[in-house]
Amino acid sequence: MKKTYSKICPSCKSKDIIFEATDAGVFDVCRKCGFRMHGFPEVEDKK
Image 1 (cartoon, one colour):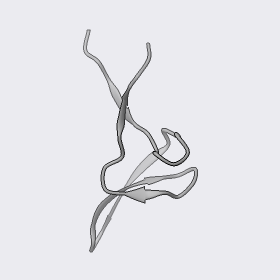
Image 2 (tube, rainbow, N blue to C red):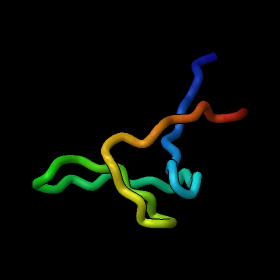
Image 3 (cartoon, one colour):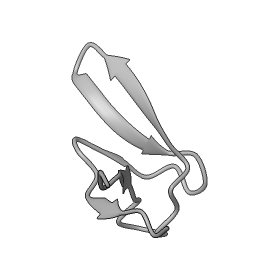
């Protein structure tokens, strides 16, 4: 069985993440708290 992963906000631990492309680059943005940075960490999804 293949493992799946989700990005997680390092600030509030939410998995509600979107991608934002700007002139400065591509960012992960948390829709819950607004935290943004290049590359949020990923956690393995629990079954």
